Length: 185
Length: 213
Image (cartoon, rainbow over all chains, first blue to last red; front, side, top):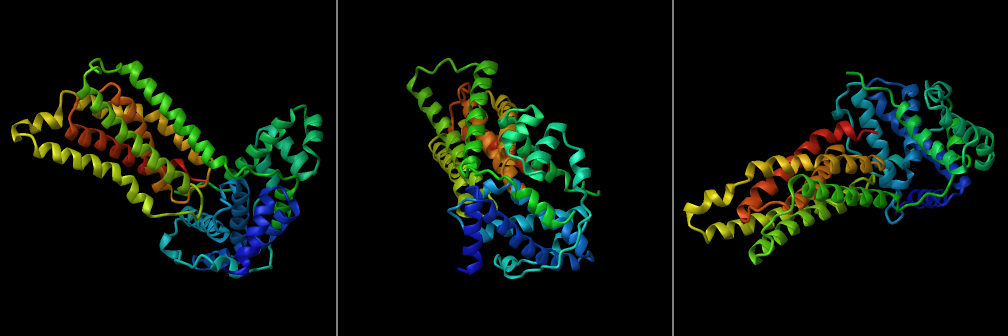
C-alpha cells in the first residue's frame, strides 16, 4: 500500500470526525493531485488550465458534500479516484466530447502526481450564492465565510441552530449543483 | 474564485460526519417503499380471499419469498454501489439467483404437467392485471429509492438506476402477491419475473437522467 493512501486516509478519517486542520490538509493535497490529473486529461481535448481549475473546484465541492459516502473500512484512493473520474466523464459529456478520450488509468495514478501551479477559475462564488434561497445564503455567509459559530449565526439570522446546520448542508449541495453548468445539447 | 478560497470556505466550522447515513437513508427508503407497495396492493386491489387452503398459502409464501429475496439482494448491492470506488462484481450475479430459482421451479412444474395445461399455467386468468399492477405499484417506491440514491454518490448511473428498478419491482411484486390468485409457478416466473425485469429496464433508462450530480 502506498504512503499516499495511508496518509490521505488518515487525514480523511480525522476530517470526518470533525478535525478541521486535518480536513484542510486533505483538501489542499487533493487539489494538487486533482489539478495535475485534470490538466493532463483536458489537454487531450484541447482545454487548458482554467477549465481544469473549474473542474477541480467542482470536484472539491462534490467531495465535500458527498464525504459521508466514504466507508472507513475501504481504501481511500479508489473513492477519490472514482469521484474524480466521474466528474471528468460528466464534464466531457457536457462539452460533447467522446468518452473514448478517457484512458483507463490505474487507481493510484491520481494521487501519484501533484501540481501546485494554481490559477483563478472562472467560477464566481458570489454570483452562485446569489441564486440560493436567502436563508442558505445567510447560513453559509456567517458560518462558512465569516467563520462565526453556528450559535452566533442562529442568533443573527433568527433561525434555530439546527436550521442553520441544515441550511449550510443544503446550500453547499445546491452550490455543488449550480457550479456544474448545464449540459450543452 | 481561487481554489484556496474554496478550501477555506469548505473547511471552516466543519461538523463530524455520520458514516452510517448512506445505509440508513437507503434502508428507510426501502422500508417506506414496502409499506406503500403493500398498502397500495391491499387498498386498491384487495387481499386474496381463498388464503385458507394449504395450497394457496404455499403459493403465497413462494411468491413472497421470491419478491423479498430479489428486493433484499438488490438493496444490499445498491448500498455498496452508491459509494464511489466500492464494487463487488459477484453481487450482480447474486441478484440473478432468485430469478434462476423461480425459473428452475417453473421448469420442474411444467415437466410434471401435461402439455395441454401449459398455456393455462403460463397465462392464468390475470396476466394482464399482473403486467399492469406491478409496474404501477412500483412507481412510488422507485421514486423513494431514487431519492435515497441521490443522497449518496453513485458513479455508475445506469447500473444504480437499474438496481433501484429491481428494488422497486421486488417491493411491488411482494405487494401484488397479497392479491394475486394465479397459483402456478410458470405464471410467477414469467409475470412476476418479467415485470420486475421491466422495472429494471425502466430504471436503467431513467438512471442517468435522475441520478446525475
